[in-house]
Image 1 (cartoon, helix red, strand yellow):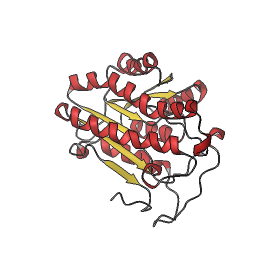
Image 2 (cartoon, rainbow, N blue to C red):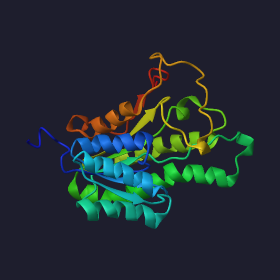
Image 3 (spheres, rainbow, N blue to C red):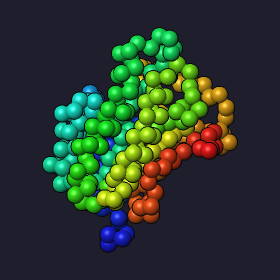
Image 4 (spheres, one colour):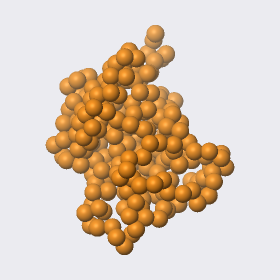
Length: 252
């Protein structure tokens, strides 16, 4: 098989928050196409190991690494694991986030900072650690996971909505600064996706309107977009937000 037949063969990815749901499916999708993947979880070593084992059993390469990406040293350690374990870092998928529902007037400053820290501080720290290696190799992909709530609003989630909106600005800034090094940076903004929700996330917020494609999305549709953005066909796409929401929001 030639490089043209398998353009991602030999690439190395870090996927944050990849022990379950979108992150897990994304990690497995990339591994299916020859990418060596570092699986990341905040605390659940067993779940991270299970994903890595699934990839290994399917013939892929993966390492599980538990790390709090809001900690500077831990975020750098996560990227270093990819470099030491697989020789490089080519793809960074920033998927980790915190989902909780709290009425605005009851959000504590601690809740606010903690909810913003995972997607914003975590993405900043991981991207800052990964960028020099990508710049050196003159190739890279940084993909962040936003959400439809930052465009249409959602009650009781002002902190989470703000965090996801901030990711768009950060990703666009990186797209401009890293473009000379052939590094693309894009946001994927999922709509209502059928995932398992931790108890801390509370009940799924009700849909205020039905998408034109009258169903919930599935994790494979998000993982498929991550995969596409890593391909050579996506070399000219950067600084964009890819809306995957069944037509609930058109992005205009």
